[in-house]
Length: 272
Ligand SMILES: *[C@@H]1O[C@H](CO)[C@@H](O)[C@H](O)[C@H]1NC(C)=O
Ligand SMILES: *[C@@H]1O[C@H](CO)[C@@H](O)[C@H](O)[C@H]1NC(C)=O
Ligand SMILES: *[C@@H]1O[C@H](CO)[C@@H](O)[C@H](O)[C@H]1NC(C)=O
Image (tube, rainbow, N blue to C red):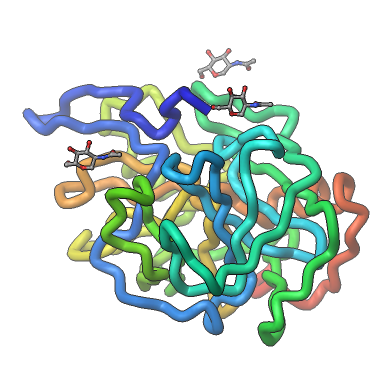
C-alpha cells in the first residue's frame, strides 16, 4: 500500500481559499468517546502499522461495512476491535484477520461514488461488548436536514504522528443530499453529490466540520445512516458538509453479498 490515497488529490481555489479533497477526513472539534458507546466500531489497521487506518462497523460476527476507498488486500491489514485506544503497541488490543474485502462493483475512485465495501472475517468474532452490531438504516429511510447525528472514529493520520489515538465522537446534523448538492455547487470541485450519499455538518461550521475516519459510521438515534467517504478541506473554513455513503441505499447490496437478513425495525421515517 504505497499509494497515498489519503493525500490531497484535487486542489483548487474558491475565493482565494485553497480547498483540497480529503479522503482521510478526521474528526475536528470532537470529544473523547468510549468503545462501549460505539461497540460496532472497528479499526482497519494496515500492515506495516504506521500506514493510515480506516474504520468500519461490525454488522454481524463475520462482516464489517466500510468505505470502498479503504481497500487494502487482506494480507495487508488486520482488524482491531473492542478498544477505545489505538496505539503503536496496544497490548490489550484484540485482532481479527480478514478473509476478503469486497468493493462495490460501481465504486468509482475519481468521482468517489458507490464508496462502500464489505470485509469478511476469517473467523466469527465476539467482541464481549453489549450489542456489538451496527443497526442499519432500512431502505427508504429519510433524514431531513438538521436531524441530529453523531460521527465516531479515531481520526488518525499515522500511528507515529498520531495525536488522536483515543476514539473521538462529534455531534453533527444531517444534510439531505439535495441540500448538500446545493452547498457543494459553488465549491469549484468536480465532485458532485448523488442520491446514494448523505451529508453531515453543522450549520455554522463552528466545530467538527470534518467527519471521522474514512469508513466509519454516522449514527442517527443509534441507527447507522452513513459511512464516512470524503470532505473538502480545510475544515476550519469549510462551508461544505462532509459526504457519507447512504447506508439505506445499499441494504439490498449488503444483503446480496453477505446473505444477512435485517429486521425491518430500524428505519425512522419512510420516504414519501
Ligand atoms: C502488501 O504490502 C506490501 C508492502 O507495501 C506490498 O509490497 C505487497 O504487494 C502487498 N500485497 C498485496 C497482496 O497487495
Ligand atoms: C468515474 O468518474 C469519472 C468522473 O466523474 C468519470 O469521468 C468516469 O467515466 C467514471 N468511470 C466509470 C468507469 O464510470
Ligand atoms: C511525523 O511528523 C514530523 C513533523 O511533522 C515529520 O517530520 C515526520 O516525518 C513525521 N513522521 C512520519 C513517520 O510521518
